[in-house]
Image (tube, rainbow, N blue to C red; front, side):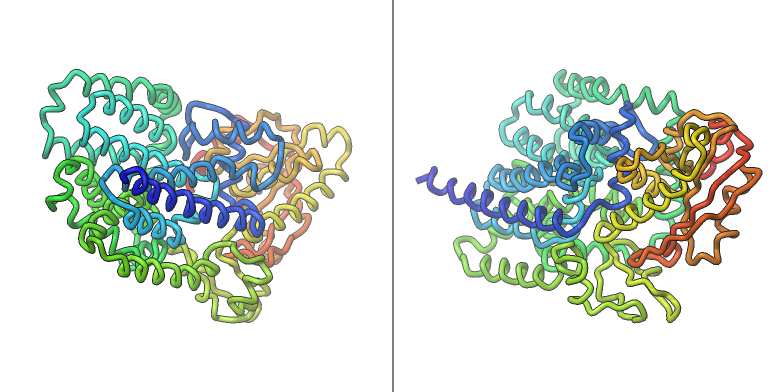
Amino acid sequence: MIKIVKQKEYLVIVILTIVKLTLHFIMNINAGLDGDEVLHIDSGNHPAWGYISIQPLIGLFAWIQNLFNSNSVFVHHLFAHISAVLIMIFSGLTVIKLGGKWKAVMITLTCILVAPGFNLSQHIFTPLVFEQLFWILSFYVLIGYCKDNNPKQLIYLAVLLAVGFMTKISVLILIAGICISVLIFRRDLFAKRVSWFAVALFIIIISPNIIWQYMHGFPSVQHMFTLHNKVLVQLDIADNIKLLLLTTNPFTVIVWFTAILLAPFIKSTKKVRLAVTSISVSFLILMMFRGQFHYYFPTLLIAISVGSVIVENYIRKRIYPVFIYVAILSVSAIFMMPKVLPLLPLDSYISHLNLNSNSEDQDKQVFFTQQSIADNKTDSNDKRIPINFEGYYILNDWINLTDEINSIYSELPAKKREKCYIWTRCYTHAGGINLVGKRYNLPEAFSQHGNYHEWIPEFDKDATIIVVANAESPADSLRIGRFFNQSFEKLNWQSAIFCPHARTRSNAYYMLYLGEGLKYNSDTLKRRYEDFVFE
């Protein structure tokens, strides 16, 4: 009888995981890679124990994917999709570990499926999907320790948290939540040898990254401070809450907020109070530090699993409330998902939302950043049809850009082509050119921006540089060129490439220049532009 009951839970996990994977395959067909993804893909060409804005495990995953020598979206989403599947599986297993039955499993996995933010963040090749994976894996092991009190579980937890740290340092928030929870409920752990062995193991595993950070002046810390000063301090709290509710689906708040608010105090979670309290504390830490809405995703992912068990215990054996709730979630997803995710081909998406280049109805799209709320507007002279999801259109822009760069490059004398490089204003441009430009064997693109600052190739002052930047219109060529002018005797504007679906007006055109008479070699250039690394 017990086996039959358990089979229901596992069957729900299998069915809804297949649905999840199907959604990702559809999105792969309809969209390409976005700007952040190409940065992470390019990190695989520069394997290291650390990077300026990301952790080293992303570079390892990218290096493995790059072994396929393919521009396929499926290939570059390989680890993201594996992680998305594991997130579904272990979210369901966490519910079972907490004592939940098939109803709680169904609620949990449906909540994940209908949350646009989870689907998007678990689809693209960024640290967000791996962050969520290692949070749920760590929580699963922590629940196991709370129930079994097996010291080996603390060792497993230390390893998972360490690997999670090597993926995204935000796992320190979960570690802080666990430590505070231990201080409240299990101070005896500080006297156990196994606890300190686990701490030592954690430090050993992350030490290569810490050493790298030390040798490079802790750029990740600088990146966080810059992010805090430029973005988080100016965060609009009301908009952030709206985005959090919208991206996790407003109807799921019943489940995850129940866990955050009640889980540390109710009788049914007494055996796992250490674990569930760590999640509530992590949520509070994020609130104290004004975290952006997507910073909450790992916390809420776990809270959904916990909250579903609490809801199931409340409704007891009644089935109809579960089916009604799942139906409401599903209907809301049918309404929201096509506005947010690339579930439709681009032309169908534009038609579905009735978008046009001169309209003021871009609010029909669902936005994932406060910036996009502010700048996704157009005017009567703007020929764009702005699309919020970059992956829908950016690959075509990169193809057009590399075509034009190749035209400029191929017209250079042979000697100049031998010492030619491509300098871009933004890391997105560099990543896109390096990815798509392989078809032409274009020279390496670099940038002073973000991780690319560390990857600037070595060249002397006799190098020829093709320069790429963005502008609102071709008339901006002189103003945009000022950023690069100081480094050349001559900076000649070559052409402008229209980007018909660019989300912002400032990205409506690619501007191409040919720089001659370079004043500095690569090392000097790198130092002169180091203030722009974190812009």
